[in-house]
Image (cartoon, rainbow, N blue to C red; front, top):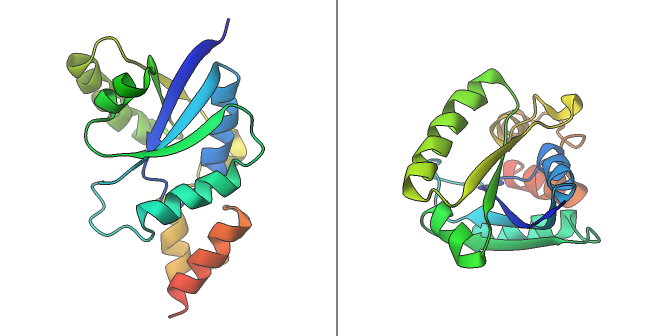
Length: 162
């Protein structure tokens, strides 16, 4: 039985094919997946604005039935409650991701024990891709076009060609 709504929060700076893969996997579990773009992150200077990140996600998920893209500020568990999501989707690529995600999941459980965290693993062909790595490679004039949707690649290229 599919659950009604799950929220997949993140900064998505920028969105990658790994993120898209997790959205598709989450659609196998939930009737609706709300992809929630965070306003604030530990990264002090995001490459793209919240609006740009939301737009990229809307383009990348166009035609995917059951996907909604939104933005939020504050605690993700409060946002999840607000939209009626009983679960948060988190991607875990490597063991190093798990440590951080596990700590966050336990903290979120303490803040809101009615919102579960579900860990999903991307397809192995995306397991090494991260937004941070994409930005680093692009900063050094590397071609990241195979890791991100075309509109994102064009925007990344433009950002670093200045």
